Image: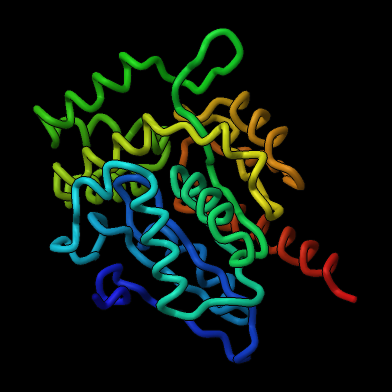
Length: 275
């Protein structure tokens, strides 16, 4: 199977052949297009790799296997197979949004020498509340209702969920999200939603072998501040940066803030490893 075509892989090359590489992972219901306002800030000095998980964006829908993509492991395999197909190595940074943060963490654990670091935008290791100590943001009944709505009124779900994710403060972001949700096959989207909202990677966090930057949205309806604090405490060598934004998609609504935070972190991280 041609992984490059299957995952609609796009490579943006820097001038220097030995430039470090950023590989981006998108969130549930989204595609690589959501990174389009961030990538221009890195064209000079970094190679950049974008791809769509199977079942999302312009990936090859014929490659979708329900048993594989009902669990996060299927998306982890997509990421690792893209890296292998491109023979990525050296100074490689994974940049993930939302559930892709969990995917990136699991990929780093599985292949500890692949990534040099992780940049995690809006991460949540578990969206479910677990009494008495963990507040993930949602009760199980809330998420089961969301999946039920997806099954019975997919377009209605998309029109309701997009403003929640975007905080309804940016009409362009809300429209882009809604269009992306609506263009995704409902069966594939529902399986990705199931893997997203019912996964729990908390037991694996302490196994993450690489440093990370956590970019948390200050007013995020999906990820409470308590989740960012939990993740920061659980991930060794992590840096927490709270962005003064609303919504769950700062790379779309405030790309300049995301790009600036990434630049600062990458500069500092690479300076620390210089002899």
